[in-house]
Amino acid sequence: MRKLLILVSAVALVVAFTLPAAAETNFYGDVRVSTGWNSFDADVAGTDTVDNVSWPLDIGNTRFGASFKSDSVGANVEIRPNDASYMRHWYGTWNYGGGTLVVGQTWTPTFAAVGGQNWEGGYAGMYGDMWGSLRAPGIQLWMGGLKIAALTPSQALRHVAVAPALDEWGNPVTKFDGTATGMLPKIEVQYALKAGPAAIKIYGGYNSSEEEVAGPPKQTFDYNSYLIGASANIGFGAGSVGINLYTAKNPKEYGHVGSQAQAATLGATDVNEVDAMGFLVNFAYNFNPMMGIYAGFGQATDELDVPGTSEGTHTLFYVGLPINLAKGVTLTPEVGMMENELDTGAAVTPAPSTTYYGAYWRIAF
Image 1 (spheres, rainbow, N blue to C red):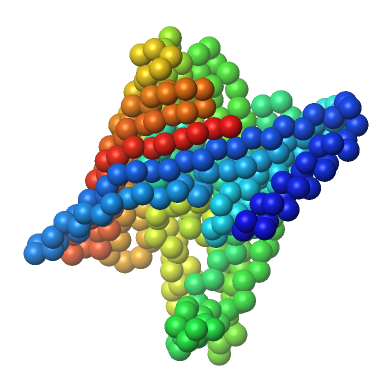
Image 2 (image 1 turned 90 degrees about the vertical axis):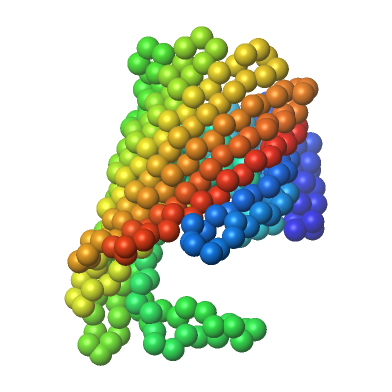
């Protein structure tokens, strides 16, 4: 990863010094760390609560980037510390007069988050906020408040072979004996508008994939999924309220990033689908330029369409006090609670929860 950072920085510097004078190139970044403790309660009789120190680098949001602009053409390259996917943004833009063509990976039209939670990078997108497809490769058109995107489709595989395969270290891994095919690009749309003090986003998306199982007998399963919702940020003086509400069909198969909804399951001849919905409300207020407060509550629910009961309920509450120590330097004490319950019709259904308390540190440059 260090070699990659050195290479990207070197290339960016060379480009910056060789571009025409009219071109604009800017470098930026920030580093973020959570410091505190997690307390996990399994909500099972006889099982003790587990306390654990939490002191991680926020690899999801720590970043280094460069932006470029020259006449009608622009670009943005942004990477983060090595993890499952080091690339955050990697795209180019062309303003053709009637709008902007975007090629590459950046925020998708279904990313419409309103939550203010920071702890370990934030979990609000799992509990009623909207990360949607987050950042995904594809082609987008931005025309005023309208965004239309054709993105890499999510491809579902649910048919599991009887005997698990082994990885290169000899550990068992899930093996799928089907073949997944994306039938169409994932299509997403967002329309943003202003209504007095409210900034509103209306968004939606559709994804379709097909799985063919060799059998015998040979079978084909279709996974059709969608996501529809709206968010609003309403300002009033030094305060603001953010609200998000959505509904979805098969959010896991759609590729809803962070969704804790159950996955669709296979019946004898068809797919047992999942219905989901969620909401989140976030309140923020600035006491002065140095200090503020925010608080949020969110909940996401899901239900698997099979005989009997199989319902998930995921709840989040948080409060934070952002303190601006200097330009670009922020310390945010934050406490919160996350609870997850899966009701399968049992007499006693555990609702395991995690309570956290600590501080979030950020230096932007």
